[in-house]
Amino acid sequence: MKHYWKIYFFTLLQIGFFIYSYILYSSNSFQYRNDYKSSSAQQGELVWQKYNCQSCHQMYGLGGYLGPDLTNVISVKGKNNNYILAIIKSGSIQMPSFNLSDVEKINLIEFLKSTDASGKADPRSFDSQFTGMISNK
Image 1 (cartoon, rainbow, N blue to C red):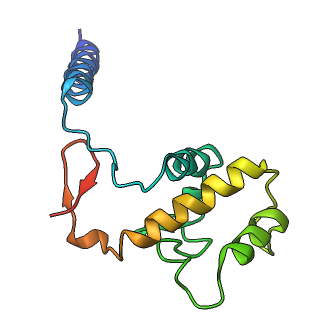
Image 2: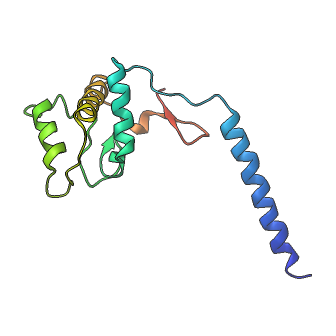
């Protein structure tokens, strides 16, 4: 009898999890980025996600801290497409070299250009949504 409270508590947690999951995935509050200048940039975001770049690099101040923030890397003086392609291809001390196809490299560069053109952003100025996502105010 004294262990029944653990079962009840666990059952309540499961019910809460399923209710929250239902609300989260049935709502239409997800906002995907739709300001890409080309489909190549959109595919570049998929390359970014496929190779888990956000685990080391930041975008808009969000992400890992091992590599630099790449939000505005394209507009940095001296860091053009060729520089970024060389880093992607050969890596650096902390970054491994990736065997991206030529199409993936072009798409990733287009994604970085699109992100750079979107401006600078400070995540502290964003609104947090209940889904865990952020959006511009």
